[in-house]
Amino acid sequence: MESQVSRSRPRYSIVAPVFNEEETLEAFYQRTRAVMDTLDGETELILVFDGSRDRSPEIGDRLRAQDPRVKLIKFSRNFGHQIAITAGIDYAEGDAVVIIDSDLQDPPEVIPILIERWKQGYQVVYAQRASRAGETAFKLLTAAVFYRLIRRLASIDIPPDTGDFRLIDRRVVLTLRRMREHHRFMRGLSVWVGFKQTGVLYDRAERYAGKTQYSLRKMLKFAADAITSFSYVPLQLATTLGFVVSLVALLSIPAVLALRLLLGYDFFGGQATTLVAVLFLGGVQLIFLGILGEYLGRIYDEVKQRPLYVVSEAPPRPQISESEECI
Image 1 (cartoon, rainbow, N blue to C red):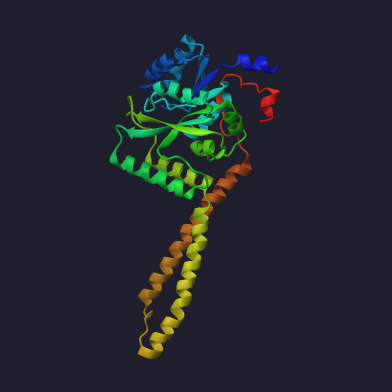
Image 2: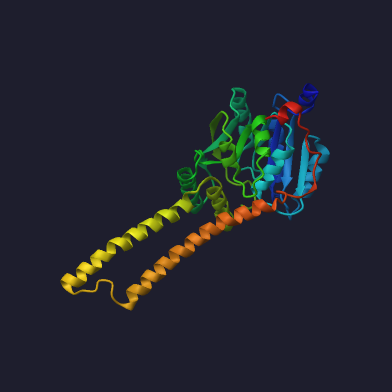
């Protein structure tokens, strides 16, 4: 039975989230199809439509009608980029699964290089950006700060300048399917699972057409999800700052007494000083109450146990063999 399951599955799966990409989807398919035609095994292309409001779902229907290798997953609404990747992984049947965005910033022509590293025995092959064309100085700066910050704060070693463009082995896929947390940072999860990993350098292109779907608000939420998913440092910082403030207050007591007794000078006198001290401590408390609220909000989302996504249209979920269930 296991051999029949393995023979019926495609060798490669390519997962591409799609959100309002009507201007790029056709070109993305053409370039990806050209790569698929050169691979040494059956390949499926899974397009995950994350509540698109433009014509991209209709374009997907047309692509599926002309190419049986194209599979469509359509969400009932927008659930987010990381959830779309999760759905693609849930439905992927390949021995190797490639995750790539559909805006053509990540060139499909790099996929054979990822596959070559996989054949060498690596189970996670991430694409690492050597350059980033067509991006503003602000985006480059914030990206550099984010990757360095998350690398310092996180409990795992996330390679810098890497996105979601990567290849993961089926064993990694099966492991990721068991992780159903709602606030997902997939590039962090793929590192957390371990296994043998390596990187491939590539030049990231500018968008083929249209504009980015990642607003500043979405980027900030993405950064918050990444930090809270893999780091307790913000919580530990509250404790550390509490000890520092307490120590300063403790040391200030004999200093104030000495100044008043020896010099007759009230160093901390006046309402303005008192008001500034109260506002400072109140602000610090509110900041860390907000940090606690972020973590508690994520716990609240998990205990509700809602599904990660709702599909309005999708192919049948792939079956897992008995040996794979043990992974």
